[in-house]
Length: 117
Image (cartoon, rainbow, N blue to C red; front, side, top):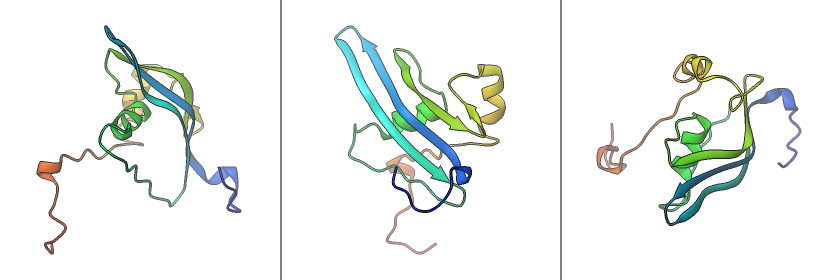
């Protein structure tokens, strides 16, 4: 990551070498293959890309909501001083929605940017 003068203590979410694969009868699909990112206190993160580029799988991986045949096969997801990939699901349910969350967007239900609200 680029050094912008802020210290490591400002980082609230750090992802290192995240890899989420789907194991199918046709073979292995490497949906997320080596994602690294840092999110600092006060920053907003938006993940953008083309359809099928891994945005949703990356976000679902951070939340540990990947269903079979998908599986997080490598990486680290550091949040609140814990690697989320190493804590039990019983602890993760208290983090998910309370301390970290994801906004799902369905194109058919999103707001039209042309209109004022």
